[in-house]
Image (cartoon, rainbow, N blue to C red):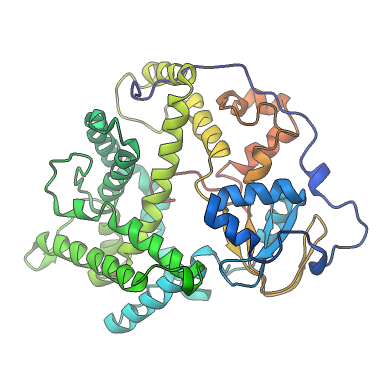
Length: 451
């Protein structure tokens, strides 16, 4: 088990200095037509996704076709979709997407249809705004963001620290199921930020009413993705009804909890994100309740997955665990995290874990309204669904020495300076501050409570 947050160190990773773009960039003078893009034929890729998982399926396609762009019969549209592995292609497409991108959430048709129905029934405005297009999408993001994504979020550090400490106190109860613990810990941190209240769902004895939702949000999201990506013949019986039941449970529990916090007819919340949404952004409680499933989907699964992989990487590399433990002990000495803390090894451990084990098969998905030619020289017609998949380069042994080893030292500043150009590229891929200045779209998002 973990000596909670312990780490040690191995040999420094050195990267070969041939950048991926030497292979990934097209050497042809004319663009490769869409029909000529290589890739698995027929339902091969979908079969690989079903048997081995989505990330391994992309890994296999990357190895088999050795191309910056591959084409396949996609699970989302059941038409030809593409995966892009070249970071320069991805950056170019981000820059060209305009003010209102058509993002990954927009392809979850099952959830979109259901939440549009709820929006009409309740007369709310933003219920499906996170997955909407155009000005509604932008307006929804502008309302949700200020109380969470700005410096205002620093006021929640105490809530997060307390929730994390309470979770650590009972981690020994989960020696045989650490994944269950990380999911509950992620949920407790989220509810602490959102509602200013920790249900302590990591404690098996917790009777807090919000503890009921630990699994529900993830179950609802999984069902909605299944309904949106798999043919009807491959869907389990009553999948849609089960999804609706999960969402209704989230509404019921959230509404009941907020009703219990009423005083003189007004919901009385401590300083928290939902209070900001209500008092500063002006959302009414019904609007917030109907947004809760989207918040759970965004705030739990990614944090859970990233935390799982960090812990597993540290467990499997005790020398790294010891080194991180010593840094945390020296810098914090048991005190809560503070913004001014100098924790370069912690940041390196997070980035290295993210490199080895990304939270999902793609950064995002996009379509464009116009035909595009990628920087690597491939034609992609308007409307084609594009998966942005830079992660495979990060584990390519042709460019990354000891690519499958967990060596956080690769992300030290001095290592970045001496290991150009490829380490600079990897640092870019994993750096949350890499943004398109015009559209302010994050290239890779750093894992956080609300990713």
